[in-house]
Length: 279
View (cartoon, rainbow, N blue to C red):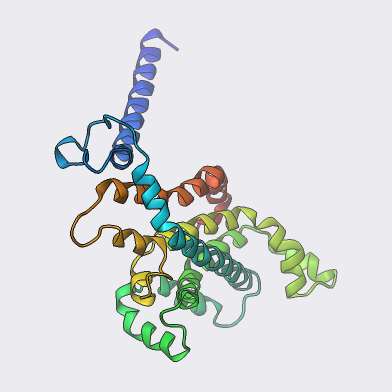
């Protein structure tokens, strides 16, 4: 390697790092505004000094936001955890059957399932409300959980189906020769090696369900039962907006998904690289 080529390589590497740093700073700007506003007193908050650091740190905004949002924070966990687990398990079973136990019409059924991913939420609100009212789940958290389970099945099926296509069919055939049936093959062979795909769909589903707003505000009218995304809107009030409380509440609402990405982020990348999103 010549000196000139080495210099060019270093310049290119520095340029990439500079671009990545600037991109990270750009995406962190909203977090900075949320944090500095949440740490200010109500009197100090105004549009003129929104970029300034707080003159005196105060956690009153975080304390007030946490006190008001705690019941709804628990509702979000009660909504997101079961909906994520059930939709992931159903997607795993669907993907396993479609990819390894091909039957007549399997491809058509798979395409019809995928079609569900592209149906806008707004277009099904009226029939969804009528259906949930008919089974007496409208206005309650279980109805919202059922909605997210059903809406999550297409994407979880897609991820698991593509992941299981990477598993050799000879492994299934060998298990069949040993006398294993469809259920035992899934429980003893397929499920134990599905961790990368589960990580991908759990992160995906948890984030989508936690941050979802439209279904939550339409299907659950009682503020006591609403998840944190809807309760966050109610923090604004009708006469005076306590921006420090509002910003602190937004940060509190974002913490669970942030923790999920910090703990499982590297496994998420491994799951993607393992073929879970390959066509």
